[in-house]
Amino acid sequence: MTSETANAPEILELESFLPYRLYRLADAVSREFSKIYRDRHGLTRPEWRTLSGLGQRGRMTATELGEQSAMHKTKVSRAVAELERRRWLVRTPDENDRRVEHLTLTNAGLAAYREMVPLAQSFERELLAKLGVDERAAIVRGVAALERALEAK
Image (cartoon, rainbow, N blue to C red):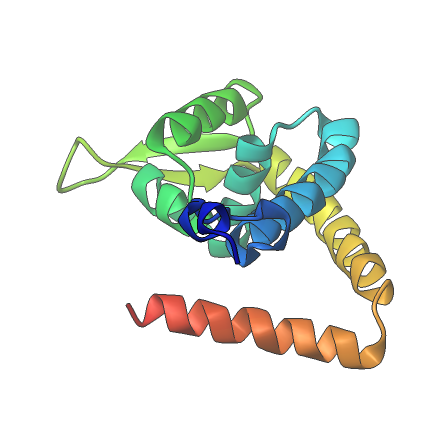
């Protein structure tokens, strides 16, 4: 080892850095799935996440939506406004705290959500089908283990 090599700063190779790889993979999967709800309903990612969060939970506040979907409050706010403009959700003021609004899907919003559920499930099946049985089990276990480890902090 030359003195020049010993003094060289260490380089982080992003392509093999796990956090970077996970981010890129999640983004690629999200972009691929977004084609389905964008083509079907003209939804953006934040609008889809808002629709699916409310479809799953029934009633949420904007703060709860942001926490569940890891979206910044401005993205949640814009998504809520757009879904409200489409008449896919309604806001109901909280009886005890007028600053809080409860969000629920309308029948039209619920219909759009229910139409998307089998498409989302099919997308997930097709994605996992690209892996062998052992790889599928390993990725499901690995993701769950990382989620548990990060939640514990």
